Length: 373
Image (tube, rainbow, N blue to C red; front, side, top):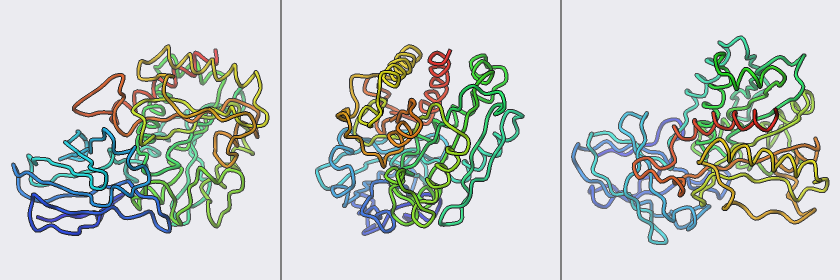
C-alpha cells in the first residue's frame, strides 16, 4: 500500500499506514496560513480491498464541524468521474470507508480542477474568433494571470465580468466557468449570440493559480485570502487581485459575478451588496431581476437559504462583491455552490458534481440574457 499527494493540488500527510483498516492521515495547512480543509491524495493498494482512511485533524479544519456535517468525500479511478464514498465525522476525525474496485484510487474534498485543465480551457477558448486572451501579469509563483475577453469591445453596451476560484479549494467554481465559457463561445447558441450582440464579457476562470496547484483551501502562495484584498491589493501580497482590479478600472464594469463554493450550506445561492454605503433602489431592483431570472431558468437555484444580509453601511469592503458594487455603482453578486449536494435535488451517487456545476454555468448565461434583455 502506498499513499501519495505529489501532484497538482495534492494535499495529505501520512501519519500511519500499517494496515488497510486504520490508515491515519492529516491535512496540511495552506502555506503561511492556518486555513486547511482541502485534501487530494492517491491510494495504491489492492483491488476489492476495503480501506479505512482517517483524517485525524479534520476537527480543526477551517469549516469544522459545519463543513463536515452531511459531507461525503469524492473518489475516482480514472480522475474523470468522481463519485461519493461513505464518510463519517465524529467531531475530530473524518473517516472515509471504501472498498476499492481498482488498485489505484484518488480521493478529494471535491472533484479537482487541474492547472493542466485550466491551460486547456484557455487554449480552447482562444480558438474561437469571439475570444481574445489577455496576459495580465504573473502570480508570486510565476504563473500567468489570463483574462478572456469575449465579444466586440468597440460596440458593447455593457461590460460583464465573471471571475472564479479566488479560493482555490472551491474547484466547483472553475467547473462552472468551463460550462459558462463553453456556451458563450457556441456560435450556434441563440442565448450566447443575443448576449454578444451588445455585451462584452471579461472572464477570469482562475483567480488563484498558485493556491490551486499548491493544494490550498483558501489562500494564495503567501497565505493571503484574496477575497479580503479588494480594497488595497498589492503586487507583493495579492498580485492576482491587483492585476484584475487594474483591468476592471481600465476596461470598465457594468455587472460582476464572483463564483465560489460554500463548505457548509447544501444549496446554490447568491450574496449581494446590501451593506455598501451606496446601495440604492437601482441596485436593489437589479438584484431582484437577476435573482428571479435565475429562479426561472433552473431548479438548482433557490433563495430560502444563504448568508445573512449585511445591515446598511456594514459591508466588508475588502470583499470583491462589495468593493465592485461600491466602486462601479452597479450589480455585483457572489454566487455560491455546495461542496456537498443540493439538498433540494439530491444525487446520492455524485452529490454536487462537475457536471452540475458546468450546467449551472450554462444556466447563468440564460439568466443574464433574461435579466439584460
